[in-house]
Image (cartoon, rainbow, N blue to C red; front, side, top):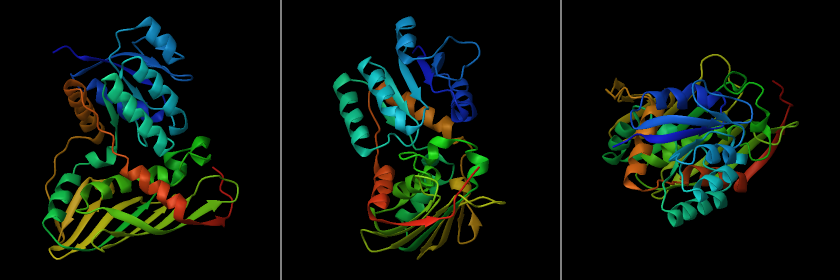
Length: 308
């Protein structure tokens, strides 16, 4: 089977750090072009627009869209209309309506749409899901705290309306939670802290319950310095389960559980290749729906200004 001819759209930090190395290491793909207003990729044709790229290289099979979510719908629509398979960096869109529209369009055009959630592919997540399926949950506590100055230096789009603010990393925790929980969870209340000079929150505290009444508490904060924290702790009848460092490690009753070594983005591209070959889509909006619910129910708390 010939490799899938792939193009990258939006050549920024996430594309360089994660997408390009993963594509290079996957024999199912051949990177044939890139389109970006500001960045380029060495060794392949580069364009400033997708339209110019498709006109110059009409046999592109698929595109990976790595621009901010506020601009992703138009690019995805253009690619799907052109008959290309589409990989959406997380979150898959700025609104739920956008993603629903794209999913319908992909079905109509007979191409694959992949709403990727990279944290679900962290090494220990599947083992955690299996454990929770066999135990009775008592409670879940998520602590997702990091330094925005380190991870998103001078990236103003994340502070604009639609940029999600602290939910940009927080949605990673929600993507794991919605995957590993045996039953659905629902947000009951939320407190969102907005810097007085920003349009997106810098911290969030979410109170949730599962369909069976299990309490779930999530704390997100972008002001943490020093050691970063990306942990999910579940108290169960089978002992305490701890997903550590964003799902890369797992402890059950204090003992480490062996997990695979494949990187998150390598696993994402393996999944995307399978979807393309099988002509199927994978468009789960559960994490984005929880973010929307948090904004709908959230108490807005204004805090001191934040500057990079």
